[in-house]
Image 1: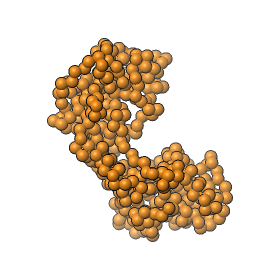
Image 2: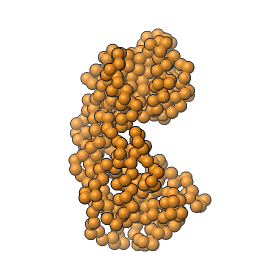
Image 3: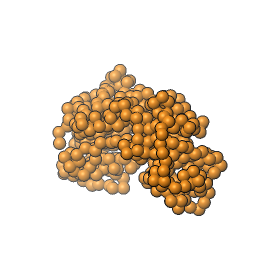
Image 4: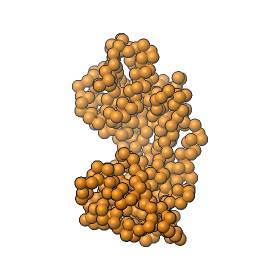
Length: 410
């Protein structure tokens, strides 16, 4: 399959180090394979493809790379446990994880791809990969979706001034894998900052307030909602000893969420939270959106928090693991106000703790790590589990049959 115009522009760039900011589903896996193959066709080369985690390296690239190399009849042997391929010309391609970057020390490399580099620690490059390229004067491709203005943002800017460095920026649409209609759908569903970062590949500043789309005059509303025995209550929950919190909401036919009540219990447990919910709403069906870790964590019993809730008659709406923190935050910001102006989340004025938390929590200075010192995070987590389940961040999936058979494009 040929490269798109944008991918070919990156591929044809002759600079030794290239830093590329690319939107989601740009086709980074496909381009990385071309880049790796170009170096590997020369004998005796040592090449690393590095992903933020081992699981990502295996899921994103491994099967696709094996198929592409086998199709060319280049493969001499494959090591499944080491995620490495030795080619008939003696070149070696290895998949590695930035989780334990120290394990890569001591190697000598001809080329490296750092896929989703913005989600790696800078030490991966500065202390390990860059020195590994020195003796052979090897090259590197950084290709990533931005993550705020972290070290990759600095590297992307500095690349414009360094000799033998280049930086470029391409949108999701430029990659040719996702059509304009899907992009517009995502634009309607996401908040403006998230859309620009994830699809336009811009480096957004996230310093200051986490829920920057919250506006009291827009999101705090007193609605005349009659809660009858037939009303299903949707409750986001976060498990702690102090405080244990719940955000109680009603969801209408258009999936708009209105938080009507809140519960905050100090020095408590899941049994007592369930009892309090049933005391306030004895005749209602309860759909709970809890912290996914509650399936294993115990607060005051040999039973898990999830089992306690099920025994109370609650229907649990939860996956096997929690969504990424930044995805959960983006989902709430989008629900507060999407790029298209839709408001999917409102809060009753009496829910003072929800309003306090969502309007005051900030990031730690210079990071995208939520500050938890003021205990504002627990209620925000509860709201986030609820909102993200009902309005998850949309990630378009390209036509896999058309592009890569059974493989995903990242």
